[in-house]
Length: 200
Image (cartoon, rainbow, N blue to C red; front, side, top):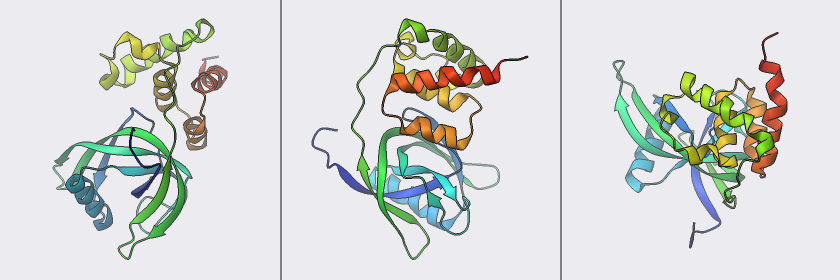
């Protein structure tokens, strides 16, 4: 992000899901304000902000977004059999929402501050079991990661984000894991959550 301003204004898309850096998001777009958002982002080659909804719903009145979200960049789009626009977006940098405003058309805009990029951190041997679990989850649930290089599983950032999106966690848990700044702390918390999913 060399030469980039530490702040920006983004169109915000509050959702009932959490997008992580490097993650994949598929959306069907039908509300005029979000069709405008997609047009604007495509025209200007920029992304939009994805934030977990704290109050409200995805459709209708503007929802209250979480204060920390992830930039989403549109990488593909198509029209479904129902005629609705579908987009595929990938998660990029995290940000903190500093203030928001609602446009006349109901689209939520936010002034955001970019979070510093976290350097790569190797996965310590005491957390290596999480690599095996991630491999099994990817094999069963996430074909887009099946050919990920082995180096990805050795990176605590990548590993933590993939586990956080693939494990059946609550929205609040996913949001907390997004907001953690230490990749090793994220992995440690995921390790401590795992016994909940073990069969009796």
